[in-house]
Image (cartoon, rainbow, N blue to C red; front, side, top):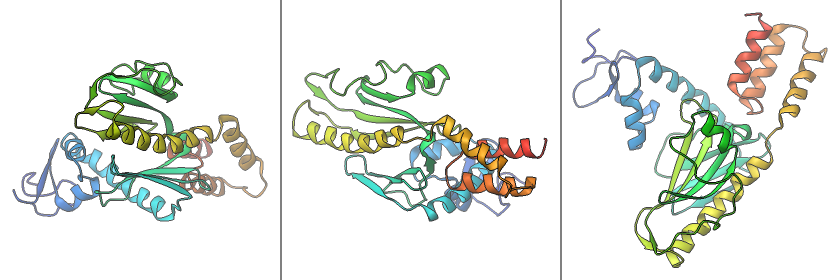
Length: 269
């Protein structure tokens, strides 16, 4: 295969006008769109990905599209400043962040996938919540957090003017372990109308994130779910067990990593 004339993923012809560079060749526009190149971050991620990385992400996107199809928001909030919708499906214990300008379905996460978040003004963290301390220890974040988990918003106050306010959400996802929402990218007076409006918008998003964190399925509850499934006489074969755990994963009650681990255990792999 000529790497410059054929898509490394699907094998379709490409040329200089409809191809995207990846780490080991090129992909066509269709595969690039399925990968997710609706933002500069997406284009950069594609450029650093190998053929197998692209295939894996496209497969995940396909599964995610099915999850989003069955996702029924029970509550959502729209932030005009960040240009996103944060929605939760409380029945399935799932949530997603939907950028208004990107057409691809947003990634659907389970409540347990949310590790925590931090609010930053410039380079200063003014609030964190959740398990960010352990996330830093595990190398999930670039740079230090700079605040104690659970610190109240406004405890560290900026003075004068500010031109950068962000909300960084940390996720248990090896392919993309954080989402950064930019609420302000132009200089404004701290405590002024624009700044206060931005902080109010952040608080609306925080309220839903706090709800997700407070309503995660506890580890002992997860163990009870698995124990009940294993002991139930309804599931007498490994195939039935695997199907049940697959349904739990599709519903977001357990992660796909936990499903794969359970499947290997049931198959004695």
